Length: 236
Ligand code: APR
Image 1 (cartoon, protein in one colour):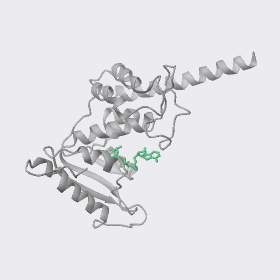
Image 2 (tube, rainbow, N blue to C red):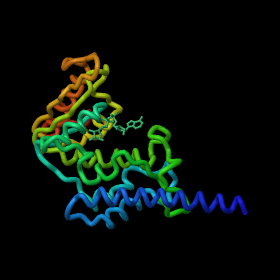
Image 3 (cartoon, rainbow, N blue to C red):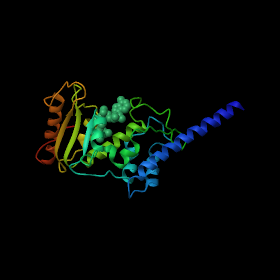
Image 4 (cartoon, helix red, strand yellow):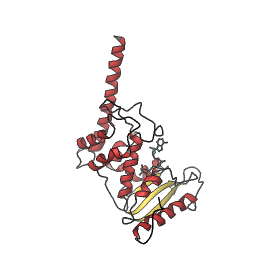
């Protein structure tokens, strides 16, 4: 009997956490006008419920992105890498910059953890895989997918805030380098401004090798693809 009571209490507490998660999702979503948040929640859940926690690929969120397409805002889009706090602070002040965390989907899921499990339609918020535990975990795949959409949407003059207190501000393994930059369209992105932010000590400057790599990628690949006479095969 005691075991049964403990099991029921645990079940109630877990489903309450799932409800809390849904409430947070809905409250954050409803701050954006003109969207059907119930539809967005349904599309979101479909990506990961009743699935193995390490087998949710980024494409599982395709219908979510369709249900809530990313807002575009030419000349205001701000990308960042290893500078989350300062980039978010700047985006929160005034209307100069739009980070993915200020779009509907980014803001709704910023800072949250979720996953499902096989044989259940629940949303769990504890016991979910860590970021590096497996590549196809629900949270990591969401950020990869939404970042791809944000990269696709980039237009006009684009800004990226990178960290000058680390040796490789443009880290090939980062989402910014491995996903977002690759989705920039030469027909839409006019220019990329890099803002280097120094935390305590600056270990690098604009002559950094990784920033030169970034410049080469943009000139070789982004602009190459706008010239039909060039072969761009070796870019990515
Ligand atoms: N463990 C936990 N979380 C991680 C880890 C990790 N090892 N690596 C990345 N993350 C998550 C964190 O939430 C972190 O704040 O990804 C976020 C960004 O990681 P960074 O390495 O700082 O930067 P990057 O990989 O380039 O991603 C940032 O992607 O979110 C978009 O548009 C946004 O341009 C931005 C870029």
